Length: 163
Image 1 (cartoon, rainbow, N blue to C red):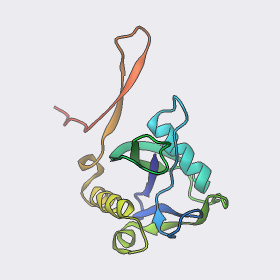
Image 2 (image 1 turned 135 degrees about the vertical axis):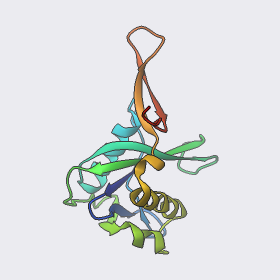
Image 3 (image 1 turned 90 degrees about the vertical axis):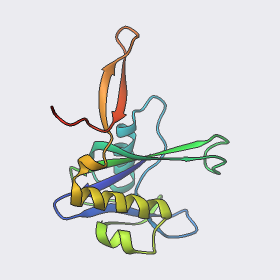
């Protein structure tokens, strides 16, 4: 799960460089979900744990599926990319996990070679959303009642136009 925290007022995005990777590339903060934890809650928690920045869930942007991933405990890996809005801006990053943490201009992140392929692609998607409207890229979350009494589920979908 990753959280792409976008400051819409200035076009900056929160990125980190992992301490434990062979290549010090810019990427979005993220990590594993806890058992029973919703997508947005995981993204918000992981961003805070890695960067000290508080944020709120806005949408699901994309899903990466990969098989035989070395860090997936012998399972196939589903990597969900969420768009978050910042609630705070001061960085206090986790020095055990991160080498660096910065607010970078999204247009610069799109152009840099110091990133991973997925970060570069998501940066392009986010820049498009910033310029053309996030309603063009977002999968929003709607909580609906399940067929099981008293239970609910989250449905992620492109919001329908108001009629």
